[in-house]
Image (cartoon, rainbow, N blue to C red; front, side, top):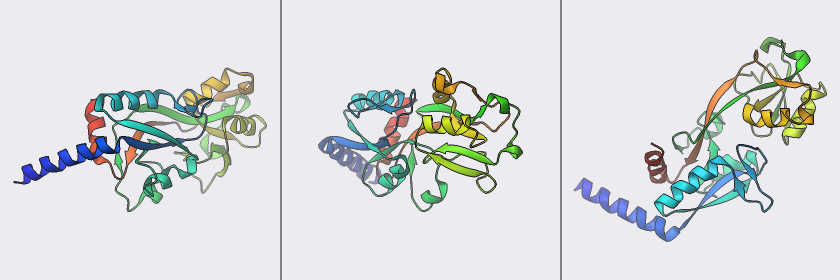
Length: 222
């Protein structure tokens, strides 16, 4: 009997999804190439969307990508303004997530984050860092905010300028994103530190209301 009702629930849920048609995903409204960005028409682009669109096409779903300020991504999901959020990670904003049952997909994309420094500061160690620039809404994992002054920056060019001008000791960056800027004139005199903490992480799709879609995505990713 329990299996029968479980089957009925699955059929009802699948029918509801088909009728709903459009599932809204909150995405950052920022340029973070080559990982994700908004094109000239404001459409979300990058490998995360490619993976999710491929899954949606397989499953007969339609995803709508809603650009949201990075600091509002979690609130938009927890407030049911959207159905999902991407990217997300269980380690991000942990205190704000307490009491919420958030479902995470398997990893969609791996990344590495760490410190960007002036080449003159290549030997800088963690106990010598007193100030750190980070993109607004980011959590600099491995850097104690109680001991380091954190400067929230609007975008990568502003972060690079803070480091290059010497107004901060280092900048917390995604290595793939930073490498693109280091190849440009704006990155001259800067380098990725090999001595300061580095963090290997993963981007996930998350939701508080669509655990079944998350399970289906995980099966597809396997």
